[in-house]
Length: 272
Image (cartoon, rainbow, N blue to C red; front, top):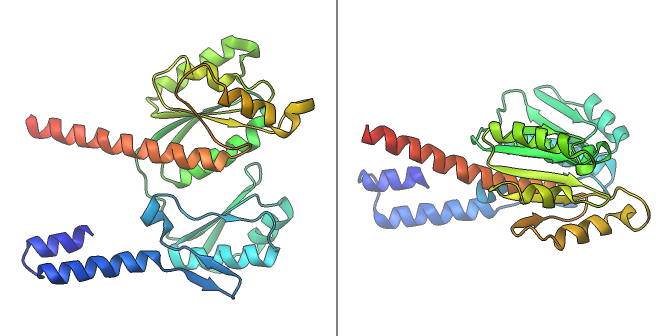
């Protein structure tokens, strides 16, 4: 879009030509890639929405996941799969074609395939990530990996639930010193950690309820309801075990804040 506008202002193309190019670009961004008559890859989703397409491995045949993952990497430089079983991750790691690399994140249940020369663009966004307990780490790792793939720097501390409030405050202080833009808090059981954090900071806080705990809390319903009934206004809540969704939202927020920060620096430099 910027290139088209630059050509227009330079007088290299007419207004009608610019309109036609913009319409063509918009059309190209909506095109899908049909893969073996079973899936449609949205190759331009990252450019269009700021969030790359992720292949959900859960519920799919292993060969489907493998085909989609490498097809995405071939066309756009990188393919991301979530909810990947360890056996499938091992298979994917062993079947990497020449010219590609596979990152296996077993704890996060994610696999990322990229061309050797692919570099993840950095946005300057900074995200804080906390878990209440160690049982929440796999969901937090999903969030950490995906936020990193969206170009953000992630500062994290695990097992800092309010059963020991001193560890909570210590971890929070460290995150704030890193000048983070938004905080993701992953918690199961009573899930009061994100509510507590939201009442202590002036940053966006995203709560991720996990299916960890006893009795009714086992499926994540209790922590979800706790977060939704928060008495700390402004807490954003995603679905149960949805670390990826929390990371996507947090990265969009952090990216926008980082962009504003850069504009302020440029403005100050111009004034100087």
